[in-house]
Image 1 (cartoon, rainbow, N blue to C red):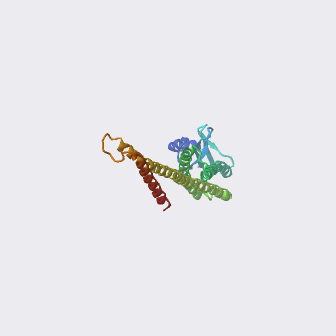
Image 2: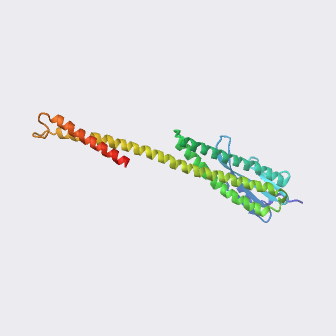
Image 3: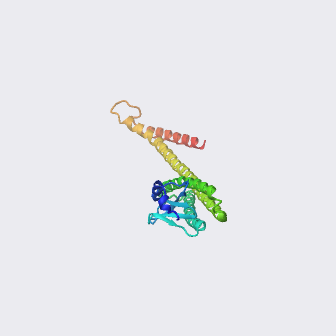
Length: 262
């Protein structure tokens, strides 16, 4: 009589299969083989989520854990059906990584064209947080898949090229993600440089304005003192003050322009 996988499956492994956020893992048990692959995906609300999918390899059969039914469901045609299932979910992850990379490239091009949107920083933070999480998940998933591949390649030798293709898609997805993260770092550096340049220009303008009005403030304070016998208080003193302040202002402006060109 053939054994039922549900009877011999370890209770802890059953909990792992039901766990929606379980990380990727491969266990070669004495009675069966146990695999969980976690990959990025898009949910019904168009949000990026990490989805864990579990599989059990028992004797000649391959089972997939259905979270809605909360039980193991046998895949048809064994390794070929397993490959087709993995091909679909891995291609979805590859498409998501490629789309994220395209969005980051578009963000970079708009920034280089000086067309900076108001929500640039919020978009930058959102993309970077998703990509870092995706990169962390994909690294572990690739390691677990390679371990599974090495342990079982003799079993699916007839479909070895298909499973090689899955490995290449996983690696390409990670390259897209890492490339996007590098571009986001460059975007932030360039954006910071633009803001710093604007700040420097504002400070320079304020310095010139201060240089122009500082002598006037000194003059107002000087002549506002309630004290007699002050210089320039006789007839013609106002003209002398104006000429003196104008000369000082011109000298200061010329000095600042000279420093800037130097």
